[in-house]
Image (cartoon, rainbow, N blue to C red; front, side):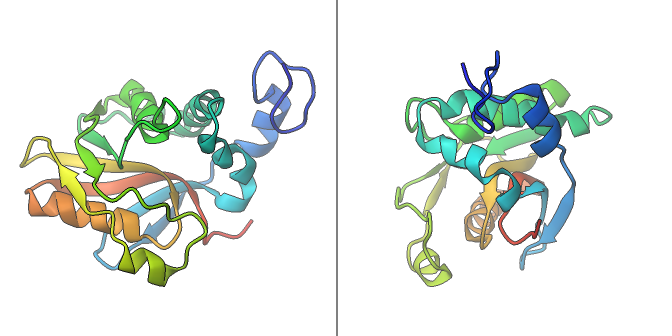
Amino acid sequence: MRCHSCSRLSLSLICSECRQLYLQPKLNIRKLKSGLEVISFYSYQDIEPFLLTKHHPYGWFIYRILAKETFKILSQLTSKTFVIPVDDYLSSSYSHTAILAKELKKYGYSPLYNSLQAKNRVSYSGKPLSFRLANSRDFEYRGPTSIDTILVDDIITTGTTLQEAYNTLKSFGVNVDFAYVLADVKLKK
């Protein structure tokens, strides 16, 4: 097979050279209006070609690599809390947020799959903030209450999805400590 990034022959969809070049996480924290802290690991622009694979069946393999390489930075941490993937709805036969939550399981987090689902399936991709605000995700929560958790998603753009997820969980008595995302669109290279 060929590396998704450089097209060289490789045993993996992202070769070891490209992992070294592109997948070296740099922690960043963005605080949303609600006070929710969102920890990102990359600037969106740095890993955009990898993130866009979520719209293709082979994206499953790319997201597994992204999760593994990204969360290595957490190897010194062990947590005994829950992780909730944001809208881990099966699309293209897999859920990219469920892949991220599964990788976090290695670090002591307990994933709560299918517990936070959007009733509104509208795509926010490339849409302005006004569109996002007019078309909420309308999340539904079906998980335990009175727990501590973190949220996990792939990208933060405006923060509206994470903000809405946070507010939904809060209304069920769930304490969201913070959120992990792979990439932040507002970060510059």
